[in-house]
Amino acid sequence: MLKKLVKESLIYGLSGYISKFIGVFLLPLYTFALKPADYGILDLLNSVAVFSSFIIISGTDAAVGFYYFRNEFKEERSQLVSSGLIIRIVFGLTVALLLVLLSPPLTDLLFKNEETQYVRLYALYIAFNSVFFFTTELLRFQMKPWIYTIFSSGNVLVNILSAILFVLILGYGVTGAILASIISYGIFAIAGVVYIFRNFELRFSFKWAKNILSYGFPLIGTALASWVLVYSDRYFLNYFSGLEQIGIYSVGLKVAAIMGMIAGAFQMSWGPFAADIQYEPNARRIYAKVFQLYFIGNILIIFVVSLFSDEILRLLTQPAYYSANSVIPLLCFSSLFIGAYFIANAGIGLTKKLYHTIWITITAAGVNILINALLTPKLLATGSAIAILAANFTIFLLTLLTSQKFYKIEYRYSVIIYLIVSTAIIIVLKSIFVFSLILKIILAAIYLLTIGYYMYKTFRHSEEFVKLVEIVKKFTRKTEGKPRSSEP
Image (tube, rainbow, N blue to C red; front, side):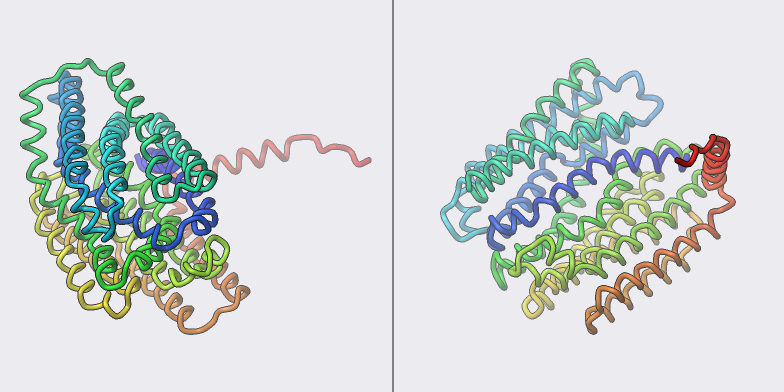
């Protein structure tokens, strides 16, 4: 079972790897073509898109996922999927129309200018985006990671190629970036609808529409609180400083996204996997092992990315963005905890105690707002990064404590705490003192060897490790058995 999760995480992560790799590859060109303020505009538009998506989805993704895996509803999956898709399309078009009508006041509120075409174009992107993600959600429910990767990676590649044309070659700036998203998501949203119609009968059901909306609507509050949790920092930065600080913060997020690839891959595969194995006799032991492996792998990436953040920024960006160095470690740890939240949420989800996510998310959002109000005026982007880190740790911790009340899992915390503390200490020392590149390489090597030795000692008797050793031995025997080529 664990092998299946790792395999699917790697496959789901492939599209994320491609996306992040291409995004990082293009970062030097984008930082050359776009000013920090331009990045700020795109980031604020993205926050509007996420808010709109929560309204469009209205918890229906969770509803479709819940009913899809119930054994008693297997014969009604076509009605479930068709009803969910039609709801998504209708809601998407409605919200897009509202954004077009409200574009003048929104533009003035966000950018304090008259560039209303930004919001209007983004409304079209949002409509396509909502349909595209319904398809990718369905592919995860079907456990078809390779088709998922084709859709996601294809979308990314078309987006990047379009961005090169419109932003770098034609010089359309922010408008070009939005057009690139419209084209890529439009193509694959249409492809997704075709895929669904070919694999499921188009059978809209008012009964299933009611079930989906009844299950999903209570989650809207949680979704909106999540938006405040994740995106309120941009609005504090915009109020206290302006679009330029948002742009620098955004670049820090892109570099930190190198670490987020693993967290995102786990997050996408974890939900269907956890639901699928819930009836297995050793399910709790598997959940505990995944929890530990997730933290070990991600803390290792945090250490490397944070240690070499100066070199990464100098390699990929222009001097105007170098100050993003201060937010990268904080944003990396923030991604760690938000990914861990989805794993810790297993007990709440499996026992149908989802109402707890409402007060937990609202509490974390409150922490984010409070710390932003206190720190952002003085520390700017760094203050916002501290706020989101504190908020994501809050949502993780409260979720873990609540989930354990309903579904006890024997997690091992000592090693995780030790790795987090030791990594944080080294990163703080690195920010105070000037570490040479040679010293950073030595520290990274020691860290890698230490974690590698721990992993060997801990998991050498596990089924997966024993199989790996057998494969290596078998390969070695075959190699040794081959005749060596004669010396010339």
